[in-house]
Structures are given as structure tokens and as C-alpha cells.
Amino acid sequence: MKIDIWSDVACPYCYIGKRHLEAALEHFPHKDQVRVTWHSFELDPEAPAETTETQYEVVGRKYGVSPAQAKEMTGRVLNSAAAAGLSLDFDNVKPTNTFNAHRLIHLAAGQHKQDEMEERLFKAYFTEGRHIGQKESLQAIAAESGIDCTAMLNSDAYTDEVRKDEEEAHSLGIRGVPFFVFDYKYAVSGAQPVDVFVQTLSKVWGEAHPANLVPVETAIAGTADDPGACEDGACRV
Image (cartoon, rainbow, N blue to C red; front, side, top):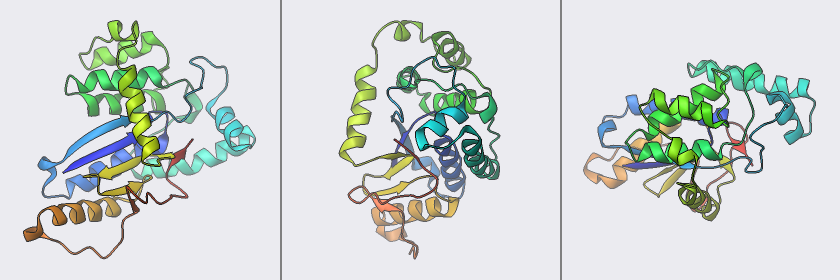
């Protein structure tokens, strides 16, 4: 089974959704036969690499609310993250442009470390307060996984790969992330509960392997042709 995930490392629900999928896979008997591929999605392609704004000011400007109201909004995200075993620190998040981070993830994919790099960037951004828009910071983060990204950062390497992912997202009608596509047949939008992922995994596997079909009563969030919408649990452009 192949799972394609569109995500931005500056999206807290993408981090939460990653944890929910991982938890679901722990309950899936065919986990070893699942291949996960991460795809680039920039929530704000025009975001500056450097800004003096706090995370609350960025969120407030995006949704037309005050920084104080934005902090209340992120409080709900913190609760969801905690339930997934994550500790997020929005007070120290450094808003930035994520384009180079996405290029780094593509570089890591070529070294079979894509999931590791996705995880590392999420933690660096949301938990450690590191500036993932600065080349020096990305170099240090990559080095922790045994990757030298200096040449990549000083070139336009993997730009086409990032743009291809984003064009495919557009063709699929993806407007918010995380967005999970299973065998390009079914899709789940947003950081849905673990049991939704468990049901989806079983349904997709059962349809591909009729002899092991397991009935699933609950409908999944949508299909690639009809992605559906998620009022909560997704970050949108």
C-alpha cells in the first residue's frame, strides 16, 4: 500500500496527523507493506524568511483576529497535540518561509531519510524554537541525520521537485493540509482521529486483497476525486 501525504512543516495539524497515522499503523497487521511518501505544500509561499512577527501575530493577521485571540485559537491546537503525545511551544516558534525546508526533505528522500527529516523539522520548528528558514539552522538539522545540505542550499536543487508536488496538489484540489491519499483511491483530509486512519487502512487493504477483506462501516473523509472538507484539524492556504 502506498500513502502519499501533502504537508507543510509549519503546519501543526500536519505534525499531529503524522502521529495519528503512525498510531494507526501500529494497529495495522500489514504495516511492513506500507510505503509513505511526503509531498511539499507551502501554506504561505510568499512568507519572508525573516520576520519580527510572533506566531500569534502571523495567525492573527491571516484570520483577521488579534494576537490574543490567535493565542486562544492555538490553545485548542496545543490540546490536540498533547493528546497525540506532542509538546508544542508556540511562544517560541519562529515564523519563516519553508521552501528550503521542503527542498531539504527531498534531498533526504534520496538518502532514504525522508520521514526522519520530516519529523526532525517538525520538532525543530514547533518544539525547539529553531529557525528553519535560515541556512545555518537547516545545515545543523540536516547534519544531525548525517546529511550535508550545503551544496543544495547554495543552488536551486530540488526546486522542480517541490513545484511538482505543489502542482499535483493543485490538480487534486488540495487546499489544506495534511492531506493523505491511499493508493490514489481514497483520501483523508486533516488530522483525523486514529480510528479513521485504522478504518481507512483496513478498507484500502481489503479492496486490494479481497481474500482478506474486512468490512468497514464508517465512511472515510473523502476520495481523491472528492476530497471533502475538514472544518477542524487542517491548515489551509
